[in-house]
Length: 460
Image (cartoon, rainbow, N blue to C red; front, side, top):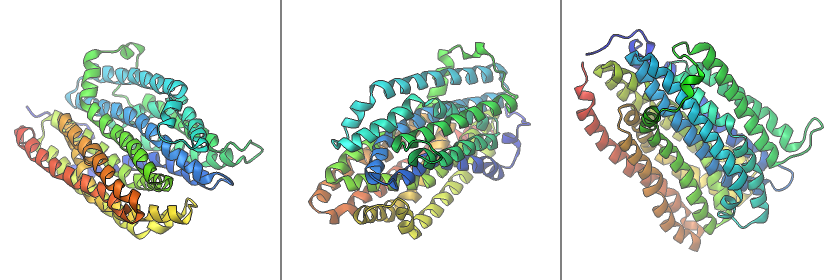
């Protein structure tokens, strides 16, 4: 039976709700991209070794994205399960979900801290043999992993606030961390105000300090404003059933984001066999495009709790509106991003002080790969919808296709031509259009089936 709701996610018109919840989430995710791109902009302009430092941050990037993937994926599962439990009025489960999410955050942090101590050297040596780049990558990545508590716990608190419809507070916490990172970057990298010049280590310290500040703000906002949730140590006791439900929803999101890490890691190796300048150029393009992709991820993270809540409430009309406007708004973001990157490709690439050849490679990547944004927008929106409607496997399949199956083999094949002549690099960039286009066809088929089997069976 359809339930009446007094929660804004069940009463505010869906197209307005997507904007009021989505805009703060979009800003939050775009600010997440600031950490890497700001570090890159400052280290690239170091007095010496700027391009090597830029390459080092590109090699470290997959691990940083893996941290984000596991943290946010756990948060996405928590978000959807918490939203549904609130919609169902199950207070006990709301509290258990929150406690188990925090318990998982502790385990995730321990995992990455151990990697920072014992695994960084092996990881770095698998991608490059350049001694300078290896040492810079090791310095930067060790600090980011050992002090990763900030990014892990902010990911949890962010989703707790979003699940209760208080995304503005999570965005505020994200802004605080981003501002601190931006302010500290030049001070610690270049050694201003009497501090030692720390280079890439300074960039790492600025990043983790900003992340810790965001996590602390998120904790304060959660304790103060999430009145639907009771916080007790007893709720930290792990429940296999709750953790299973969190990851039944969140595992596809983890894999979706983790595949970005594995894809980038694999592409770093493939591109490195063409030339180190290709690694640097693609790494910069990837960080530039993050502002657009992360904006779409932010809207996706608004789609998920809204659709999930209204499914729990039994409202077919509001679920269908969430799907329709979620796709429309996400495609709108991607169109705006496509136009911006095509128009401003040259000035964006010039920010990083690249050599002529590397800058031209970066511009060509922007011009070609950005054409995949339309297909990517549909895929990203569908993934959020699938996660909300307990169709995690469909979301996982789309992720695997668009970020692995249709990318690594195709890029590897095209790279053989590029190794013979750099004139064929445009074919390598074409890989991403092929991958997103084929994946969007699969997503469309899944959407038709889910609409028939799940959405149409809800009450009107």
